[in-house]
Image: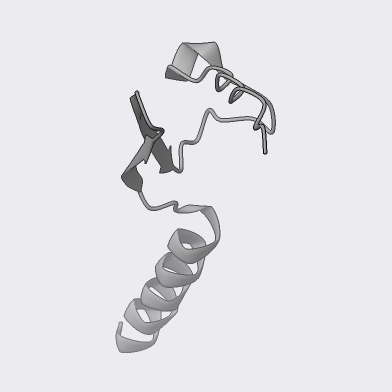
Length: 68
């Protein structure tokens, strides 16, 4: 029984480390001279490498051209 419990425990730890994913959400505030934007960086199981509108993602507004 002790051997079974040891094998089960090790298997569970390995599987949870491989397939488990932490829920991370880091809020960031980006500011310009006139505006500020709340940005959020994190992990989600349904996220892709592109913009995901279903997760509330959108393109950022381009800053105006700088003049010297």
